Length: 128
Image 1 (cartoon, helix red, strand yellow):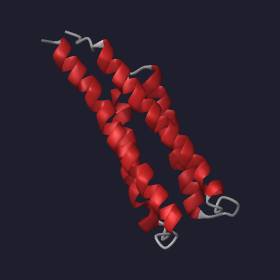
Image 2 (image 1 turned 90 degrees about the vertical axis):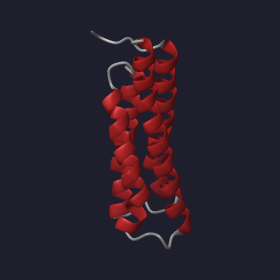
Image 3 (image 1 turned 45 degrees about the vertical axis):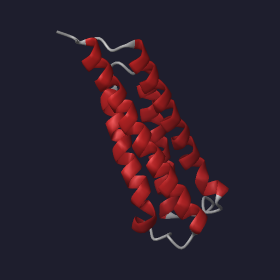
Image 4 (image 1 turned 90 degrees about the horizontal axis):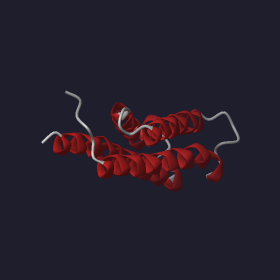
């Protein structure tokens, strides 16, 4: 039996995924904003790659929230990676970049979980 998700749960997942998408855009452009995107810095490439991946996953989830729940959980993992990237790439001394990565990581982590849980709750309540 296929469980239907409520319209509210799907809309919630869509909105949360759009917020992740926006965080991905910000992470992608942040190397230029903070002035480290003009060289061949590994942490800039990390921001570009992870930001693009968060954007694509958020977009795919927002377009089809009923069938792409797993994408939210991938964004959760990318949020964890983004959170820890200042230590991985050794830029904790650069306060603005450090805080940016920590904040974006937390945002993507929290909204990714909420998006994934929104459709999980929606399918549980619709199946009753």
